[in-house]
Image (tube, rainbow, N blue to C red; front, side, top):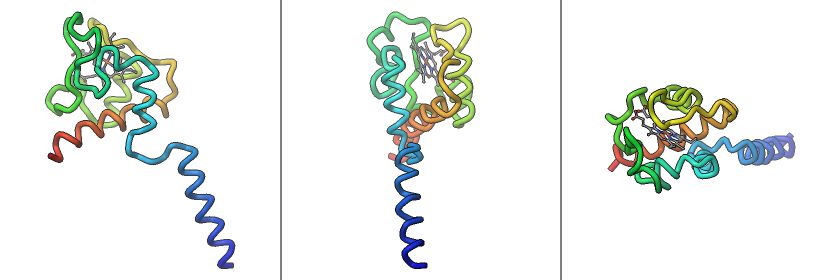
Length: 118
Ligand code: HEC
């Protein structure tokens, strides 16, 4: 019995690691970089990407909770990523899975918490 319990525990940890369930946003950060978000939003989401200065309106600083037009809940950010923002250079990312969009949203929200927490 005790042996089975230990196995369950080990499997649970391995499964969580594989699925990227840790909510620290590291999976989302990798997706953020890989999908080119950083070109506009900057490597740390501060609105200082390589082409940010050429955009009108410019991308916001994700650390500032008052900067979000569409809200900054996880669901709201995931929806913005899916649909983009018509009339701006923010493209929609419909080709990402819902899970990937949520992981990016978790990462973006982790930036927010940094600012609020300090
Ligand atoms: C070509 C440049 C560009 C790329 C690439 C881009 N964005 Fe944006 N994004 C913008 C701009 C510009 C805005 C601001 C629009 C505004 O303020 O009206 C924006 C806004 C946003 C917002 C919402 C803010 C709000 O006001 O509610 C989120 C969240 C966001 N982007 C996430 C992402 C993510 C995640 C990616 C990559 C998957 C990405 N963006 C890729 C330019 C870009």
